[in-house]
Length: 293
Ligand code: ATP
Ligand code: ZN
Image (tube, rainbow, N blue to C red; front, side):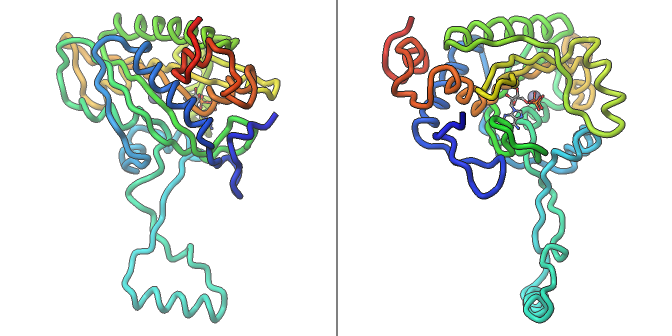
């Protein structure tokens, strides 16, 4: 089933959402902010682009060169551009080759904007931050739910080696209960990131063995379950890269992500394409009117 509320455009994996879809996204956002992190959370608004140099330093380019979307722009004066236009008229010259890569790239995951906020700091206790962003990934396929442009709400935890895995486990349990309360059937699976090149050989096996990544998967109506939320435990990787300390030691970090469009698609797969006709307990839980169960 194709969700009528996710309107395709002329490029694969880029959709326009109607207001019914967006109202559900609003309900999900409010729920996540309310239930998922009842304690002190610092909330931020982050842009959909990020420093290219930062992603290079973090190893994103090495691990996912195929997913990264780079931006290019014309750098030059008016005269130069007029010359290019003339060449295009004369012999169909290609304007792309005149573009220069920008110092920003399309943001591939929300949390990359959050760790730098505490770089070089010594924390007095564990810290939780949240943000939502439009993310871009140059996905190779375009089945339902595998978008190139999608929104990711993330919650980041920075704390001690004891605190962070405990937080991750609690987050998994809380989020699973929340999804089940919305009528979704979810499975919790240990997973690996879709590393590319040498990173696939180097990074995936330890990630799997140490169960560093967990996904909450649901059927989007395609018969194949997809991750609607996931949690990554980075141990001291980002704490080391950004010089974040806690209790005199390098801080550990974890991030938990909600794929907002995918969650709506999972709800549509179970309850139908019209949120107005969803069961009252689902509408109530999402603040769309109706009663809670
Ligand atoms: P997948 O295994 O489906 O490729 P991933 O492991 O790359 O996903 P993460 O990097 O953990 O996913 O991304 C966090 C969350 O963002 C996922 O749990 C999912 O809900 C959502 N997400 C990831 N990629 C996409 C996409 N292409 N379209 C829509 N949502 C996505
Ligand atoms: Zn993250």
